[in-house]
Image: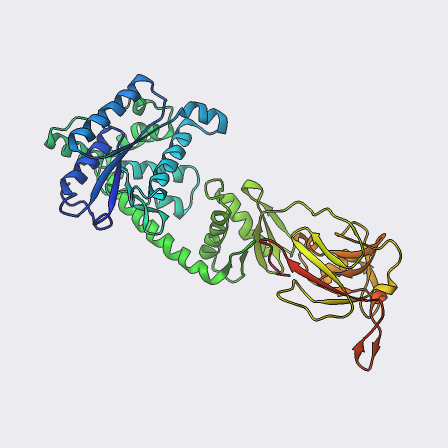
Length: 450
């Protein structure tokens, strides 16, 4: 193992994830042997999970002794993973993996290291590929373990041994006369990866020598193809409070637009190919058709485009109509006496209302079932039908404050005034002693998109 690629690590502060097992010890020794040549500032990190009792503590003691003799700084973390798993509802493997990830990210965020090096090898990659494929993953899952996972900028987690097998690692350790610790749980077939390692890959390796390296080559090709297809999604998506997918993408690109949307909302690990298929199928349905997604997300056909979003609870407010500013969900409605020019970035049209035409008891509120609206120019219809005519998606209709009395709507703020509340004109100018200007503004992270 003299040809390990250190190009990403050269001149960096590299912290080796060191459990005491054969893989991590080999990685530690390889870095120690090459640190001076590649100008690497070397350290190590050990995570004790509290799963194997005295055996686990002995592993940590072994690591401390190894680093002490080598003069390499060591960062130590410990946790009661069984207790954390019980609290979170995750399995032990997943909980331990999540705790390690946070520990590694913490070292980078606290500027103690530029890179965390882990000892994942070709066998680990083969297990990941098979695990993902058996669960129904697509080309993305077939890409296996990434060689580099960014945390911030060019800092992150690096895996220099992915091209090497377990046999390569053991041969290297024996050539150095190195000692290591054995994790007793590695033989437990109840863990999915151990089952794949012992019951699938071991027999496959006997029948097909080199299968792990072949799976590694396949996964790299799959990842390159997948990353190229993902790069094509830039021309079809728009990121914001909602993730918009425009029509026209070829199906392989469309699927990756859907996956990108799920990642955008943090649901990367919770989706299946069935969720992606359900989103893609929406393009063949009528506007308003929806699909439920993990973590409470929804996707909807939005007049030929797709919108993926996290539904918000409907706003609840009611104010007597008056001059002033009113919080209306994610927006602010400014009611000013007289006819005034709009200021700044408004959410929709500035409207001019004949306050004298409003009945007593008119209020500012969100929409309600049964609301009716007399359009500017005449013709009364249900407010729902008005929104449909204006092609306002159902999920956005609660955003528009109304001026209403009972079920009759006199203004859809940001959109239109009822014919009953229009201002008279004189010499081409709007005029009325009871004139009011209605302007809708964004609040917080809400956009002014209509």
